[in-house]
Amino acid sequence: SLTAGVVAVQGDVSEHAAAIERAAAAHGHEVTVRKIRESGIVPECDLLAMPGGESTTISRLIHGDGIAPEIQAHVAAGKPLLATCAGLIVASSNAGDDRVDELDVIDVSVERNAFGRQKDSFEAPLAVAGLDEPYPAVFIRAPAIDGVGEADVLATWDDRPVAVRDGPVIGTSFHPELTPDSRIHGLAFFENDASTVPALEDAQ
Ligand code: GLN
Image: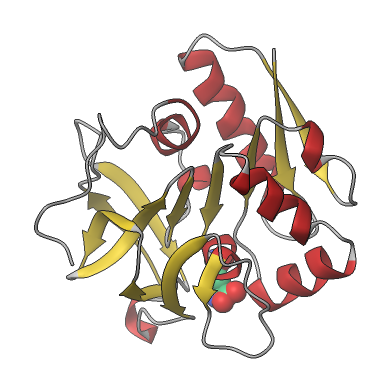
């Protein structure tokens, strides 16, 4: 049986836990989900999710609690991480904000709150590499990915990347935990293989 961790210092944690349980069941895995509020738990986890919320707060708390280097070690060991919205900002290599101490595990730069006021919150049917049908993506004060280094682009919206992969890490601007559809969690944790899920050809 698998152990999953959800970074739980702040943000929408229980929704991620439920999505992980649905995705694991869909892939025939048993999973125990642990909420990560202090150091020492991440090393026991096979897979990790870092939720949305407020990136400056999440950054401050995971660095203060010693969780940040454990997440970096988890990724360095090739284990999967799904980082969503504020989680993506924290996981990026450049958040464009001094209050965020980036983990640098997804080689992208992001711009916080970049989807304009009129679009602060919206849902879009998103074509995602590796998924047969569009994914109902919920964007809430979402970051834009404004520079892609070594990462692969898996989805774009409005000509901007909104889902990226860097090895075992998948980052999304949107909130896959807020819909009953657990295919993004399934992709990140059980199907993330560059040979079967190639990056979008026409992006970046
Ligand atoms: N605007 C938030 C931030 O910059 C992210 C929004 C979210 O996670 N829904 O941290």
